[in-house]
Image (cartoon, rainbow, N blue to C red; front, side, top):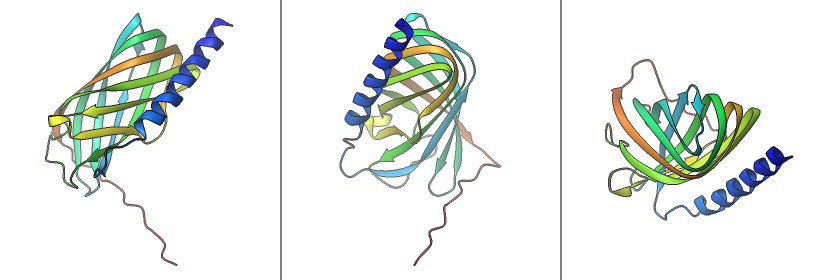
Length: 174
């Protein structure tokens, strides 16, 4: 029963963070999507640390590699495997220079897993706090854990990637 209460608290915290993050800064536009994937992570009650490999797909079709280090401070119990996170990247202009997302980000996040799990991390930061990261879809992971708290993300650029292209969706005009 305690696990179900913890999952309930995680869901409430996620809902609160969604409401807070939806107050996007005026004048920002979506410039692409950052997708990160990683392996095993173990929570240490008061925090955790995870390393993920990421690909930023700009709206213009350019793909760049990044390495992410995510630190969570707060409740974090359990373990996860196969984590995938996608963020929509918002910026004050439509162009992001190569390596432009590299830097520190901070915000709030919540996730829970019993077998398959869900979660979300809403972050702002980067050079001069220009960028906002909002989940495109709910974070997916496998494992057994509950986590909620303050999230710190460090992004480091690994450079352009070949073989990755952003697929623009076609719009039907009626």
